[in-house]
Length: 204
Image 1 (cartoon, rainbow, N blue to C red):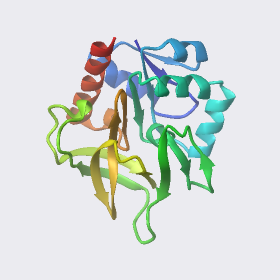
Image 2: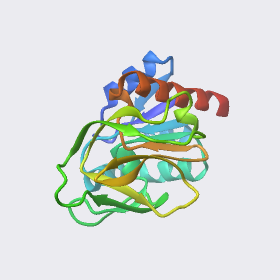
Image 3: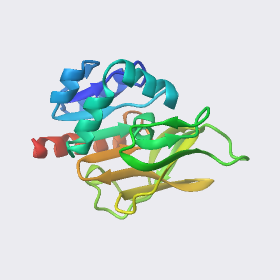
Image 4: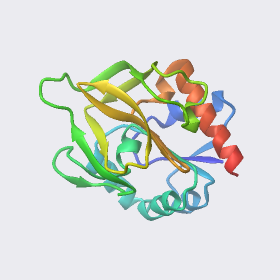
């Protein structure tokens, strides 16, 4: 079972609909006990960093989420759900994240149109399980004004360039995260979600 975490933000319906299309069994939850027991978690993305962290804390989800992540159990973060993994974010002043990935979330440099919205290429060298069968240079759909800047050199990454080159995908053990929205990225997005569901099945 994949638990999609409802923290009052995010494209919950779109994510679950896409998972259903690829044959994955998913449930939306705010229950800390369900999150603690889940074989796999997805945090979808939408909204502001500090507000999302406040919601997770208010719902009692920070502890179960960190325990799941630190145990290396399957996880997919999408857009804001990716950024929340970092130590901190510059969005609307400095805010603390889950601090599972050392690093910061930065605003795009001045002069770039924000949000970065629309289709852009994601480049990779292979080896990331959720990108299996997806060619380097495939297009995915982005909507964001801030980009992740990890400090961990052991992370596997796939990159996108929009003014700056940033990791559009990261992977480490059972942790995967995407800055783009796979649920809005048509065929390649569905392939990514199917790959994640397959990874979850193998890890069970």
